[in-house]
Image (tube, rainbow, N blue to C red; front, side, top):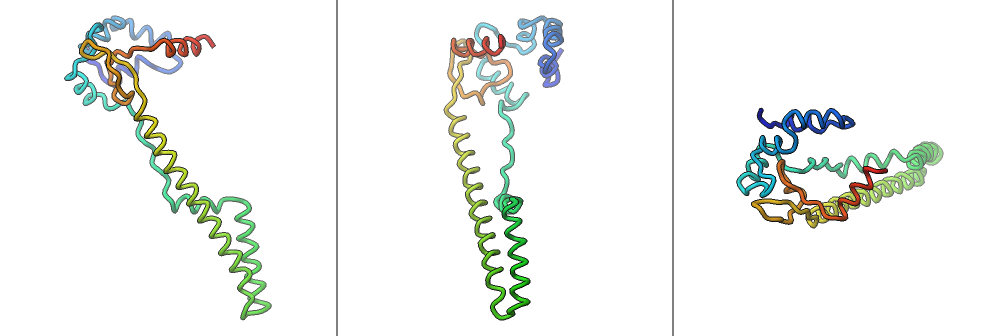
Length: 185
């Protein structure tokens, strides 16, 4: 049997704990899985195996969701009920003003429209800037995270993004407590 993404996925089906255990037992348990991955449970992966596993199974990262563009954020700012009421009142004011005084009647309605577009522009700019700041903070946070794995017979600290299939992750005491707490509750 060759280990593929599909085989690994079948070992970890959500809400199927008993079936997952049976599937793992059918390939020889943890030792059988380690054997199929050509992995030593004492020394972990070698440097060449890490590269091989990353090439075979991919990186340990979710694809980044595409960021909403500024123009899209700007258009969505017009979905606010207050903005829609202001646009409607500006159009009514513009129509009545032009009808009553064609030379200067357009000023009040136009001023309301300009104010509405200014508010929408400022809102979109703020939202877009917040999105950029959030993504930068998220990247900074991800770059500073560390976890312990056993590779080449030694415990090394790596970024979780660098974990590959077959890595032996070494849990710290506080991680075990948190895990047990989640299982018990």
